[in-house]
Length: 276
Image (tube, rainbow, N blue to C red; front, side, top):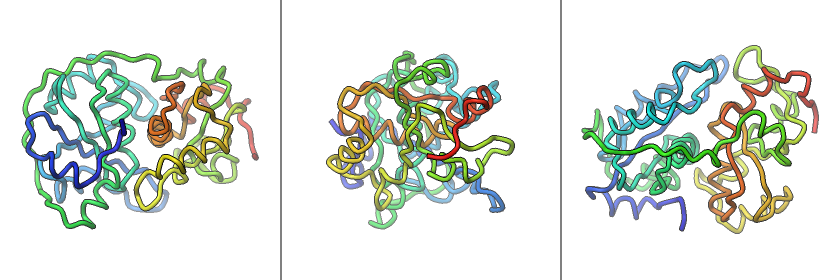
């Protein structure tokens, strides 16, 4: 079963009592450019009935690392306030097509909610097709979601260092150490056991590539159906796009390193590899 839903299929589901739609838009800070405010963009324009799910607010507020997983009880409370129920069918989208929506998809799955899909093409495709939109805050009801932590979907720092393969979703220039990280003071480069898979390679026209193309990309990297691996990136957001692509090709022997490069480079600067 696909983890994606088409715009036409979602439009047909709108109004269902079981359906919960989340706008999980988030924008990576860009040096010397005005920051985009995902919440303000949501208030101006969102899918009918969609609720804004801020992946930073849904994260561990006490951690010094960006948007780390919150505790099960904290995540449960947040999602209940957003109207999530145990039987809800969730659809997540974002303003870029396939980007931060994958992070919330992964977070929900980590906490045991399996009925979650990503809108393929996201808001850009919905807009291009002239489908209905809404402005302002959507109404939410209290939910009864129960968080069940699925530890196999999360990799710790120690597990990542010991993993036979890490797929890193950052750009080639950051992976090779030739471009700076967006977070001040953090060196670029990569882990010794990592291979580069920039998340953009998995996407075409704001949509995830077809399964056969994804399979070819993973095969070229030496990833078989049962190859154990960890996904990573700068801070755990775009790593989830690799996790999504792996799920689409039926690969289940993988987990996501939540701390990602932000944690690793701070803890083990002597292990940072520069170059290919």
